[in-house]
Image 1 (cartoon, rainbow, N blue to C red):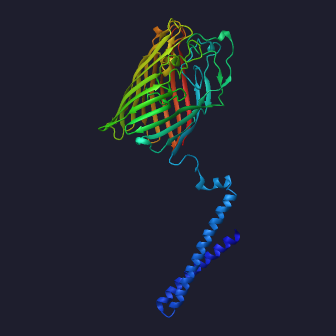
Image 2 (cartoon, rainbow, N blue to C red; image 1 turned 135 degrees about the vertical axis):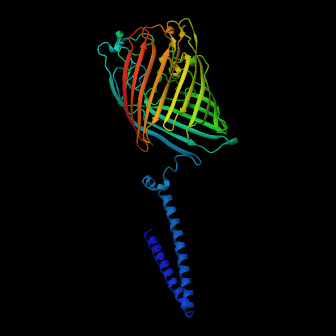
Image 3 (cartoon, rainbow, N blue to C red; image 1 turned 180 degrees about the vertical axis):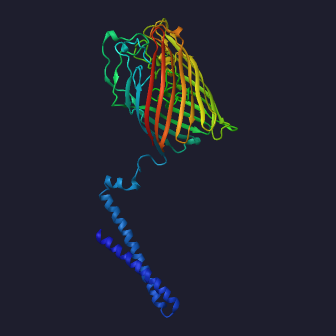
Length: 482
């Protein structure tokens, strides 16, 4: 190979020299015609050398190709060559876009919360067995909200349908670190899951699928199959990304589903009509009769949801207002024995959502809802059915939030939430009858994609016949988007 390279270099030098010589001769030829024969001879010489160079280059490429066939390039060479980067990541015609963020949270509570300090739902009563010796708060930190996802766009298929797909995950799944103690003195009362409970690992977070679906779009119509957010309750408060203010005023979660929608533009605005057929009892995992089957699946009927929404430009330049009305219907069935004399139960929810810009800096968002047996959609403070009586627990609630943009970097947040079950539908003394918060939040963008957050939540939980629990929760986080 060395002699080939040397030969090519000699040819190139000769070619360059010939070109220079040709230039000189051409200039001289303009001054005298007596040297014309010499110019022609030099030009022919340059052309011959160029042909030699081209032939040698072609020969060199053929030899290199044969060498690669005998000895394929190493992985180190592929990594060093940018032309090989991501060559085989997706099939031809597909477009892949990654997104997500890295995040770390530090959270402090003045009083203990239910279930887990990293997944707060309501404040424990001072009379709770876990508070008998010492009514104390907690401090925790974790990276479990770190998120990774990708969007996949595929070529258009038959009849002009455009397929897309999404996969999104975080690390908020749980892995048991220490089983709950088998202590009969700490056995929980009905509808009170606070004790005993397993402790989950805080340093070995397990990946969790958030969204995974395929979507087909044609004009204003679309079909979606997979797991994504509920169609109802499309908005979410800013603070408490751990439990998203579920069972404290915010409803709706993620579930496997088949969704269809029609989103036509009319005038300056756009309508949104959607329907969803989804899996039941996949959020609360309810199995009242302990037969090993979720009660929603036992009813052999899906969860049904629908929403009608409208979005249009507001009086604030460059910002839209929106509003929607939505509903939810589901059924559960027990088989081994009756619960409160009943074997069949129903769940329904009706609500509205709104987004209203008031100025270039201020925006108000929120939701209001009412329904019964709502634990599978994160309502009723996790109480769907009163086991002693078999009553479906009615509840109402919602939340409202103002977001004020102080400048291009700093946003201030003020809000309140409420989840209020009907105490008349609940029997146990430990039953929760009101779960309310009000909060302050700050978001500060240090640079592109890097955000600091500082939230304060004042939390109050009332019980049917126990003292109320009150907690002040402070959360600091840093998040870097990519």
